[in-house]
Length: 257
Ligand code: V0D
Image 1 (tube, rainbow, N blue to C red):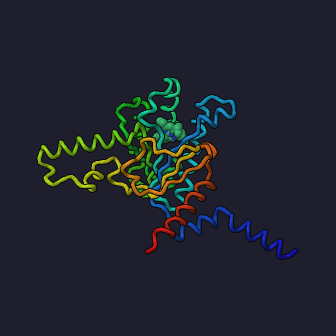
Image 2 (cartoon, protein in one colour):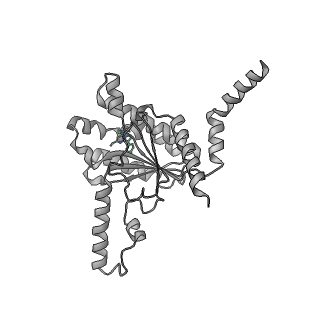
Image 3 (cartoon, rainbow, N blue to C red):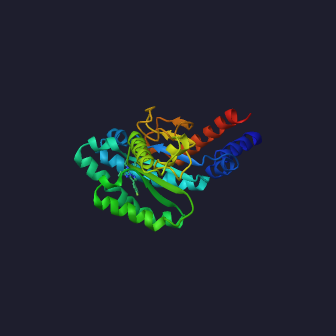
């Protein structure tokens, strides 16, 4: 009877989130995690709610996962908020999505500042509505001196477009004599929107699809990929811990000589 009780207590303690965080932090935490936050529409459909209700719930999940990522000691979290392909959605849905940054920042920016998080963006901001631009630029400005975790939003981002822009800039700088040497991998990296960031160590995609969908193609050359059927609004700290634990197992297996 006693040993059964002891086993119960032990099991309960080892699955405790706080102790798992401590365990994870002792070895090889991914520096940079990138997430494709898929399944918001499906989450809403399952509940007979409009698609935008799923997007709204997904926004709250971004906040939740930012907090636990910070606690884990992750240095950069990049989330795919809006792709260059997402403009093809109905105008009413796009209009709703473009209000989410303001709501997110209005609700959570004070907490992010208190947690020393720096908010950054990658993507072509010039094409998003000016009210959205204003909110995200203000957030970047308000957090630019924070030296904790970077929360990097991919907004109107597409990886092939990013690479094409980089190639054109390289050609431009070559013609102007700013670049004299041959193109190298390091040079291409230094012309991407992620030039100041390490490549992602771990890429998570929720909701069952197993594709990169034009997200960080160059940067993900060596990234560990982790897929789950869980829909983004249902994604929890528990799932993030699972992904990071799996990442640590893989890098222990392949990392050693
Ligand atoms: C909808 C799931 C936070 C994916 C998450 C403009 C689809 C919720 C932001 C956000 C979106 C962006 C910038 C910023 C602060 C917050 C966001 C969009 C969509 C598209 F500075 N969630 N979120 N932006 N969704």
